Length: 159
Image (cartoon, rainbow, N blue to C red):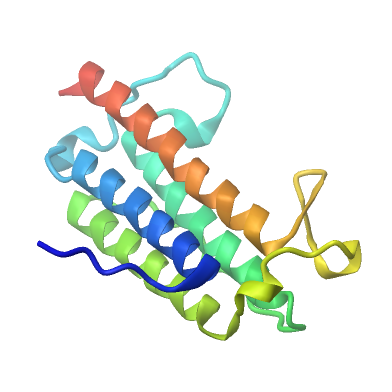
């Protein structure tokens, strides 16, 4: 099977984001729906990290947040969708597909030259830091990887 790669730096970021999402989807596809809400980490203070359901809702909501921030750099004022807690893995699989499509659409008008910015006025401010588009997408990719690992660990406890 031949893999098709997108072109340029934007293409590389989208390919890696798609791969991270695909890997997460493979990890969650065999989780029974009744295991979604099992508390896997009762000690955490982070409400986004207590169960597979809370982690996946956080990942989806964050994915929309990254793409919306990037989209709004052009002066738009879109709001990301509200965080939703699903009751089935199928719904989360669909959500992850939709997050990628939303992100891909966001990048349809972005060129490789726009990824790196040295002017802070052209960057996003989040979590007390300043990000250009490339850094935000790198953060988005690693965010999924970290939570994929977390779900892998949760599966050992709940299934």
